[in-house]
Image (cartoon, rainbow, N blue to C red; front, top):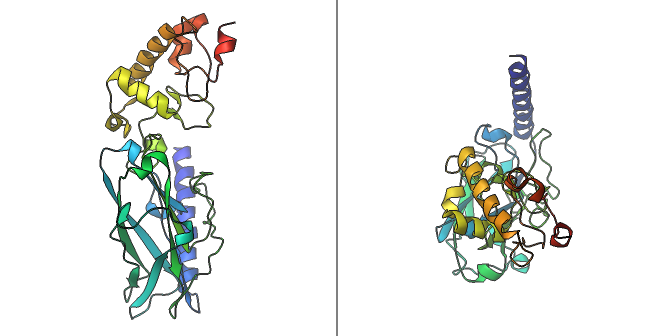
Length: 304
């Protein structure tokens, strides 16, 4: 009960901070500032507590559909006005490799924040193309200042709190609130839930670069393909914790461990992951006993 009260108090405190921030924005004088208000977060939290994200990525390798519609939100920091305020979103060609009309369609850079409103949205449709098989395509949107708006958030920082934006060394380098990067690729990546987070997807382990722990260990496309081949599952089976509940994940982990332990009886048949170490599932240790191995075990060490 005490823990619940502390959690509730912390949540109310965060909401009060946000309310104070909104009041500051409403009291702001001068030309309003435009910024991308793209957020992602867990479903159990109010969206107001979701962190601002500096990029959006579309991983066709984790979905069956050949197209994906994206909606991006733009907000104005300042007071609402009693008239419409148009502005433009442009594509920064120097930082864009995706091709309009091919990799994405439907973009119209003419946007309007309506009278009595403080924000708006615009949408594009992303198509799965062959170019995404070999490379990650980038599309960079940039907000343009005009007589109604500035774009002053050159180094955007989120409100203080326990929830922060997704850390991704490859995609999250931009911190300019007037710029939003989109990345498209068609390679297998760690499954995500409907909220776009890997933590709510059906992979019981960590992404590349993790500690290797968890039922499935670290993710790799090679491991994921082998799992689906051996267990008869598909990408859709891993899209959420509902489609891949823990008991099912445990059974799959044990099935994969039995397969890997059998292959590890010989140096010629041992299954290696993409980094050259022996492919790992947590059950290889519990089921294998002295013949099991830890994450990142090199075959030359195992077969001494």
